[in-house]
Image 1 (tube, one colour):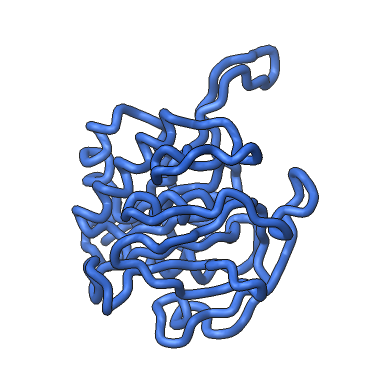
Image 2: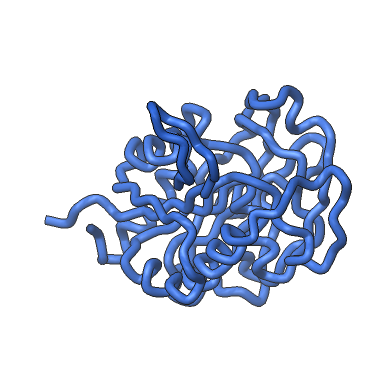
Length: 240
């Protein structure tokens, strides 16, 4: 009998993290991510930063991939100078996650980018970012909520057909879309809130499943986006 699809989730790498009597560098992942994977029927596996040349081997063992939220993408990755409001770079994580995205796209492994993960997906495909927007992260360390409206005819609209209020915490957003991507949801202010492969774009479409969302489904109760990833991953026939 086939088991639950194995879903890899990228992680933070933080120095000086304290727990108990220890203060050590740690690979961290907010518990909402694995819990959401589990609620959606998947088996979660953490993917801490590694050498980029190992990304293809890691992805080959997975049924699906999630690129998690986190720090700002270094602007040099999309040919821009850093805005004063852009956070410090996380170069090791940028390199690893870009390699994971490239490997997943090449192997046609279902891919979900969350917040930073959506932004990095866009950058990986040659897109650019707005380095600061107001109104999407009101209180430091506290998720806000705002409505997101799907674009009819997109994969996201098939998964979540109605306008919904989503948990949000970000100050950067997609500017120019990457190759083959289309916007599949927007906030009321016009901010791109979801991207995916477009049937009219230059990227693969049809059986491939590639979606990025700007919000944080792991901080809410709606499991539909993650369940769509897990369901597509389960159809690949390589379940753990």
